[in-house]
Image: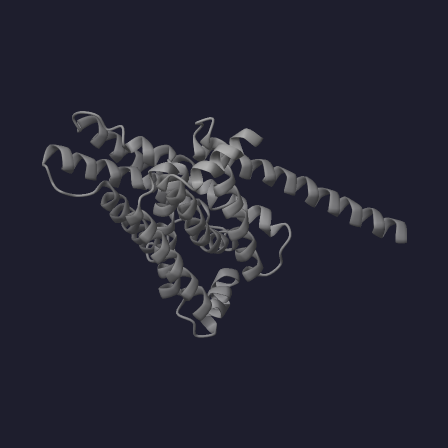
Length: 292
């Protein structure tokens, strides 16, 4: 492990792609920590999984148009369009059609994968670059991707600073927030849209398959030791940075998939946090029993 870290830090000061990956991990962690905390408190983290899998349809469609009809469209544009469409569908159906949210998310999840599979089948030649989006590859992050990550992180930070009290009210009790005159529907849509854009960023790190984990595991760990939303956000950001940068560093020299290492490390520490939580609970119970 020491040799792995030595190789990583040596290359960090030499190669641009390693620097881009680390900067991307930090910027993405800001967005993940913020939006993942909101989704966790609202108990709608599964919407991130549905959106991420819906992205495959947009990615494959963009690839199909690019190869078959020579449309000069970047594959990333397909992901962005698909994310926005998914957010709009979830908001419209759950808000106005009054359908169960789990049903809508399941349909989106399956539909996006099915559409993606059809477009991949009809796309001639090699579609191997879609593997990048299925499982992520931080070493392929480029300056334009970093710019997008930075803009999203800055917008989210400013949005949560200026509208923190309203977001807090919506997150914990949307009905009470509506009674206070807060435009719950509008803010919910904006936050869902931000969540969709965050998923696009997360996919570059850990891929479609594991995106939901990076938006839930750091928050689940941080929730064990925090009581307020801002504390949850801060803890989630720090943990996300540790997992993403640490996972990339651990996978760098052996050449293992960085996304898998990131999620494995997050999953391990989540289990540790559960054990600590259980230990603390049993200890308090024993103290109360002893006091009696």
